[in-house]
Image 1 (cartoon, rainbow, N blue to C red):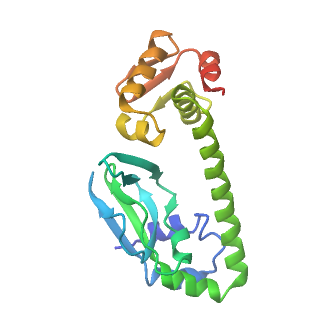
Image 2 (cartoon, one colour):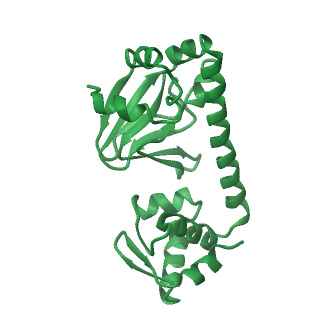
Image 3 (cartoon, rainbow, N blue to C red):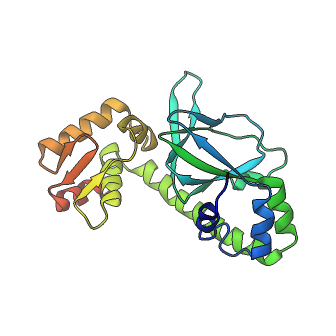
Length: 224
């Protein structure tokens, strides 16, 4: 059951922050909460799109299975982030990816048709939403550029610096195998890069805890 805490959380998310109270009330009538356990599936590649989603807590992975049975992680979505919203603008859309939980997850599902109907009644809301989605697309294009020109070590070093921010400590929030797939690095290559970073005394690793010992060296590794 959706609670006042869920509703307060949603009002600060980019897709909803410009909606009126009446618009939000209409959306809540058709929204529902999904609670997933680790590795539980939300939907599968090819399923018909009826909703888009907001992660309230936890992590979910968006992935595809290749023809040879290999899993490719497309994106890892954390609390406060939405996914599948662009699909509601297509005719008879089907999900291009599968989604499953990486830990205990709460996901709010919003009815796609109802949301589109609301947008038809408010051009101002529609334009604001398109602006937010355009910003996200630009971010994804920037990420694709990095994936195409950077080596595995570049991508991993960049990711670790991004996650650490101003700190020299960070905690990996997803399994290393999932992170490797997300960064388009083979698992054995990922392990080799981690070993190189440890041997060069750039980082230390204790389970999921990583400490950056030499930030200047890490920044050099992150440069193209």
